[in-house]
Length: 196
Length: 196
DNA sequence: CCGTAATTTCAGGAATATCTGAAACTCAAG
DNA sequence: CTTGAGTTTCAGATATTCCTGAAATTACGG
Image (cartoon, helix red, strand yellow):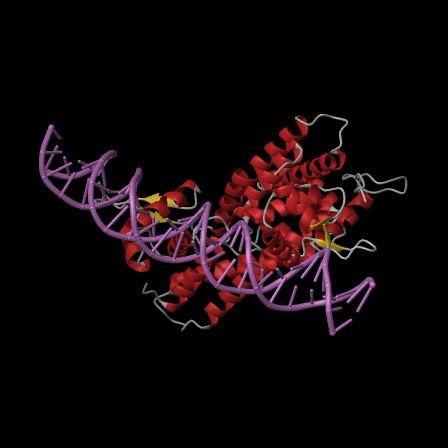
């Protein structure tokens, strides 16, 4: 591997991170190289930069494609595949979240629902059952929230993020003008209590 | 392993998920068992339920403690350590996010900043440098948002999540009454454009 | 201080995951 | 067709991670 120091540091770090995220170190490094490159690269250029075997790079690229993290490009009069990452970082973030949801959250939701269905009611497992149900509700809440915000245009999303918890103040204000969201009232909580 | 089917399904799934998240399958399963258990368990009870070696369980519990995911309990007149997970699921979520941030995001931020410092300006690496800078900004934005919302009480947080993107409508309304957050105006965007 | 139950450490073996080179496949140009 | 550059597949080699049992350590009750 013979890369400019800036790139090298980034690539190595990204490889480490990748290996904590269910993609291999190699795949992480390939992605990092593409991410920093000014133009699309073909497999041999990646081999040259990282010193992995040709087949390893091929596998890695295939995996990145299965994650939708990489775009295929072609140059006129050149048969080789060139690969690039999206210019827009937010698009990358969206893809990452989407794919991880698909692979981790959705199967978990399925499992939790099935688990609850198959359970004989009136049972020694009362506590376990309750916890599974709670877990399901929590993940469903988060999922619905995500389904909602992922539709926002990037501008809007960035606005919202930049606002952070100040949103809270804005809502209090609004609330005084036009009751809209459900809020705690003196007569009792609108949101169910946690078991405790 | 001889567990009620409800528990068994959950434990196995959790183990799988764990192994995609940088904790081992074993540690994931140990956590799952504790999570579903009605009372705190000691190491031998976990050995009995999961059939791992005693030392493996010991290591696993140690790792869970290092993640703050598990609480130590003692029973009067019993010298053994008993372990439990917090009752409140939201507390678990908060811990998870916090620890992952500490281990993944914070070092990444450090790396990105150092990388940018050490770079000779005016350079062939202009593009790579720009991408690193963009990445840093994006992560900083997300981090600030997180720092903001993590302080919210759980009730408030749940409210906000339940509201989802409807928050957007609320803000538009508010905006018409009292300009507060930065918004796009006809005279130009308040949020910097993405390079494109 | 002992004795002992509980826990932790650690070196090596077992199980996984990763990487490689050689061979197989694809497909477009001639 | 044939050819050959480009790509993928795959069985085995390598490296990494995980798990275990034996031995060491800890710390409490007496």
